[in-house]
Image 1 (cartoon, one colour):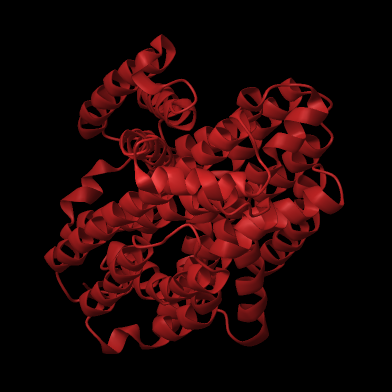
Image 2 (cartoon, rainbow, N blue to C red):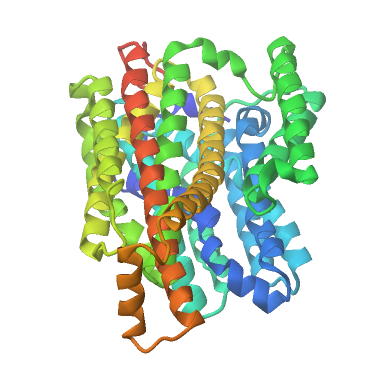
Length: 511
């Protein structure tokens, strides 16, 4: 069977169909990371478990997906990129169906674990298949379309998940994967069945796989549940942290010595790959961290519903949808470092803007900076993937994409853990400081109590209302602190990208 490299690129309608099928598969996989978040309360209630147990459905998926992503290159070399992608999509649909049919939390966690495991190769290979089958001069556009799906899906996940849960049943957040996956599988098989990549017998690195699974699994579970268990004050979280540290340390040493590693860490010897992954990690960390804490804040302080909290962060996806293809089309005409720096500058400016919110901010003022950040997404995420893959031979693309997406996934998990913990701790700190200045001898306090009493509240209810006001102000000061920190991180990324070295040719070309 001729391999993919001997076939001419797809054109016309076939290329459009392939783009639609692969992009929808990417959207579906990334969407499932966040779509369950807003349904956790409903799922936990329906299945009769606590919220903490319900979050295991999120942790299981993220943990399994993170473990499998860096294995993409090894699996694809053994079974073929097209075959691996198609089989992953098929199993993803099967396990999505089983998740929706789960009768108890144990079943749901097991099937979410399986769903996450088979989803691991989908995103890296979707990027690889697009690049391999696009004409060389249009590969930046392929990367742009792929990047748009990866970025937009987590934004719309909470909105879609909340709407489905409120109007139908939580099971449908899994059942909607069936038609999407079937379409992606059909298109992939029809167009690429005779474009399989070369395969070879790959010796399984059993020890490396074990260290990766245990190390990343422990890290992911620790990050997902650390805030609920008060971090290292919990023996369980401390133990998971130590296991993760030991396993990942030994994993790095072992992979650098092994002749057929599960993770090709030697990719980091390439300056552009290392700098690109660093910028991808820091950019996704600060971007996703803000996406996590803002819905919490607007629900706590401004009494937004879960759906409206999703609408508060969703405007970021609008410019990204329209600008990503344009950036992909014209990025080769401008130094990509300038484009990425502009994107990070937009992120930093908007984060600084959001670091000055007050508790009475309008929806328009919430949505406007988020919409402007959508421009930054297109200017950052699209070209940074081009930097990561620049100059790589086609045989290395799957491994590089898998490793880069692994760090993207870890960045999102770390961002969730750090941002929620920072928001929580700074809320407590600001509440304590505000309380020190709130006493009955202070004129502002007595005037505030008088206004509350004028509303008809008496005795303890007055002080409860005053405490709620302090909570709201403390939470607002806390989220300001969080966005201030993120603006500094974006400034760091603006400097880091300039350590990349041009030219940034498409993968498989000289660079």
